[in-house]
Image (spheres, one colour):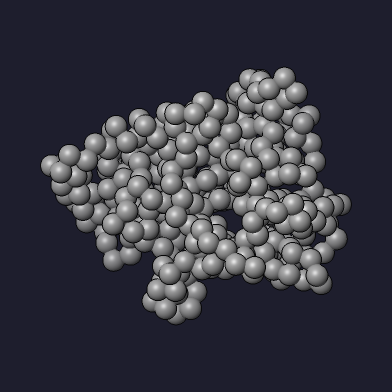
Length: 305
């Protein structure tokens, strides 16, 4: 295994609740009220929609509000990794990641381990440059239990909800999280900050049509069947844990385009830095939209969702 390279779950595609649109000649991030599932293949207009997206969209009347999933690992922290993250606004590369206690920071002398006081107490994080950043890997097809689709988010509601749900489901299932029939579900809420406009976040629930008891029985049955077939979930979790810990930063240069769209979103732009709004009234920062264009000129892949 190459040292310094974080080995992440294999990616088959991406899941998002936002998109990048072109307005007045500029590509700007825009929130959405539905899921979009894209592939790993892109055209001149962005990433191509995955075939699973079309099927779910037809089933749900045009807008995807829920996605049937299974998880790859029993350890919640392997399925969903969330950290305080600071990215270079010129390149989209990671500079510092921390958990509120310790951090790894890129410097001229290499990677340094430093205390992490959280964004509120860190001078480097001033101006909203550092914020929680989560990545959730889920399996959408039972025929490939090791391939995943990734959902990236910097939303507090999604991060808190996903972290809680995974911990709870692991507990009630008797450490059979990877065997539970679950689904991603889009939820909406209004806050004082949103001025009554709905904001959307992602939740994980038992799959539609099943009770909790039925889902637990299904998880137990699948776990027993996997063990009979020789599927070693404990070893899989151990290998994944070692792989993720093999590098200082999970996101690579190749991920910079996705980082810009997930991290530099219009929902947490510092006051006074906005000069337009998106279709649902969220402020859009000129500096952040120009970073998308800068990466495209540098040859980074362009995403549509």
